[in-house]
Image (cartoon, rainbow, N blue to C red; front, side, top):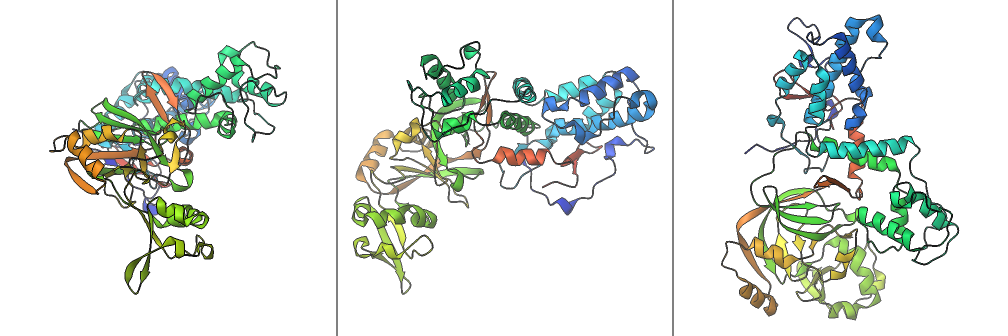
Length: 516
């Protein structure tokens, strides 16, 4: 099994910028000139490098020489083209972005990529363009992603999608007549939905054909496909086409030097897709919807292991939740909170003492001044539901059941304070307890008892919380919103003037200044 490498964050000052990568120099410190390639082949290579945006890269980063240099100084043109090709080949093979703070989900198997062999092939090729093309298509699903990238880039060059203006706070309901917004909605969807092409875009009625187009758009964007155009749908409709281009460029770079999937049974949670899969090899054994942290309380990326499950868990409310979420509810109705199983505690003379919430003047407190601790008893109304899946980590993140089942019908499900709420916890429980003495009858008895009890797993299960907004399923590219802005962060690193990594002559990797 191939080794997996999580690429660490490196300070920009950790490495000096070399004047040229080691593999770009021959034994006499003269540039390699790809002697087997004709001048015409070198010109074709330069033309291909000038189109690196097809692969999500910026050609200006690689020093591709201007075409007219081929006639005025063919030797220099050849040397600069080959050096640009070597730099580009390194990024195509290994990925341009080396690592980002907090992104432990970004993985590359550098050792599996025979960089030196690729560089030797590039130097010896009669048609070096073919080497670049093969490297560009190496990442999983690269061709499908690149095809969609080309479509969106063409759309951006043509001016992008029409923007909708007006009062976008009001929800547009099926059957409404709106002379201001409906024609704009038609024009926006006609730019990306062939079914509306050639129709009367001035029609102000929100009729059935337009409703179906909205449903298709909502489904494609992972929204509730209810044909109601509210704030989220309006915002998504007005998303610039360049945002899609950025996501696809990031998706290509993230997939470079991607490690082979582990054969071990594991849990994968894709945060922006709001889905959990129990996977073995390339086969999904279980697939369910999840609820993840909202933007102001993001679920962190993690590589951890699930070690146990807890039945009928109590909820020790985190301080932030207590101050920001529960304090206002105690202020409105402390008796109702008490009836919901919430208990109030305070430290007095070094001891934790329970306090009757109906005796507290909560109006005297605010989010910056709240001296109490809160715990919720196990039960049907407990925020963790009836099952908690424990996976030790420094962020106090776990997966759990939830009483708020209605939220799983939503398309975008970023509602939690960071932990993962499960659509079908009993199915995950069955898989997690495989190999233990627990059976369904015993589980049901413990749950019915309302007693809090833990059960260790026979074998811990790897859990990976990752952030992948571009998914390819059966050749079809599915895109989900960049809910935390992490693709935008990645794109900024992708567009830095200097690559984070250049290949060494031995096929390893050295860093260039600018790695962060």
